[in-house]
Amino acid sequence: MTTAVVDQIVVLFNQHGNSQYGGEAVSQVEHALQSALLASNAGLDAAEVVAALLHDIGHLLHHLPDDAPEQGIDDHHEDLGAAWLARHLIPEAVEPVRLHVAAKRYLCAVEADYYSRLSGPSITSLELQGGPMSPAETHDFERNPHHRAAVTLRRFDEQAKIPGLATPRIEDFAPLLGQCLLERTL
Ligand SMILES: [Fe+2]
Image (cartoon, rainbow, N blue to C red):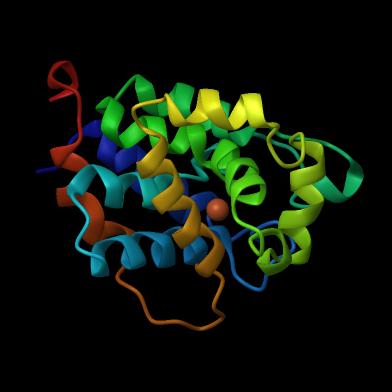
């Protein structure tokens, strides 16, 4: 199945996905495809694989520089991406995207060694994003029905930074994207 929205997402990655993934050793499209592959290999459902694929789409929608965090700028890409996706995709594919930054702040608060395993760029952006959650914030986060999916996505996000890893192409995920479209966009 292909629709205008799926085509638009594929074009977005093909046109802008070769930009650097925020100081990491992979491009935006490599990072997205590795995240989706990890989710797929873990046997997750279509919405979770699509969320993994699209979690950083906000980076492709703004015109800030790749090194915005190094310049002290929080691009709020999770909100930008989720707002765009919510017009087209089911909540199960959108909400983990909205929460994936919050999930990093959450994991840094509840897992003793999580912070120490973050990459340098991820630590830089964490500070701009508010740092580890307070106890009250972790409590609120756990009440969100999508928080577990966001935490699972976050773990893949952290791993999906392997230079040269072979993955499927963005076009290969079109059928899964099609499964996550809102009824009215079909
Ligand atoms: Fe990411």
